[in-house]
Length: 257
View 1 (cartoon, helix red, strand yellow):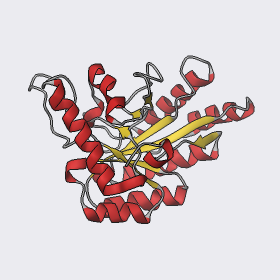
View 2: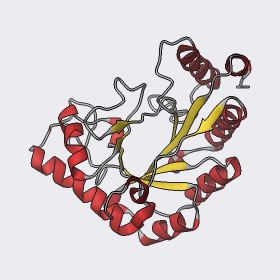
View 3: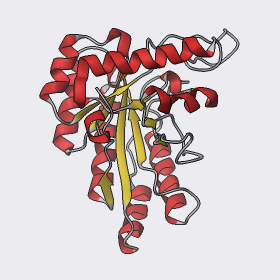
View 4: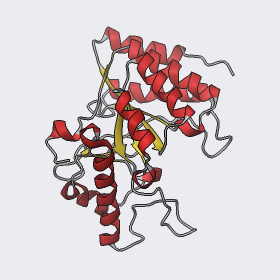
């Protein structure tokens, strides 16, 4: 299917005519190793000059991944839970950090994830907690600042900027993958229309434009259509009224390594 970018381009033109600016960020989930797909992600990030917040599964992160991240400054490591293990019963949606276990077990895993990532990535690490499947219990969110996290990221527009004292919510808003169907690229025109509508909601005051607008990708499962659409979308957003948002590292936030 040929993508019709006109709805998004028209919306971006309105932003520019009204001298509005869009904060933009990028998150990519499920990294554990230096793979050919990660190399593709890295090249795209560098060609766009757009950093990508790489949500890494702490338990399984290897040294080659750490070395790859160290060589590429556009990769920002963040904490993707602990093991990406589903703790929910069969009749519930998958989750690792909802209340299916005692709270001390849950917070132990969240702390272990941060500590492992600090050991592997040092001051390059950003203290952002990204729960697998974008699901986390509100009670767990309240515990994150005390563990050392400064950001939490799930999906869809945030309900509040600060879900807990000392913690900022920065969500993602568009995922190009058709997870419930082909697991390839979703209908590109639907994705374009959805993006234009979300930007329209921000421009007209129905949504919070102080929250960075987040693109979510999963490099390990991309086919060429997904790579191409992601590149085309990000190029258009960057050419429009966008400015790049990146989360500060642990060193920049003053948190101990």
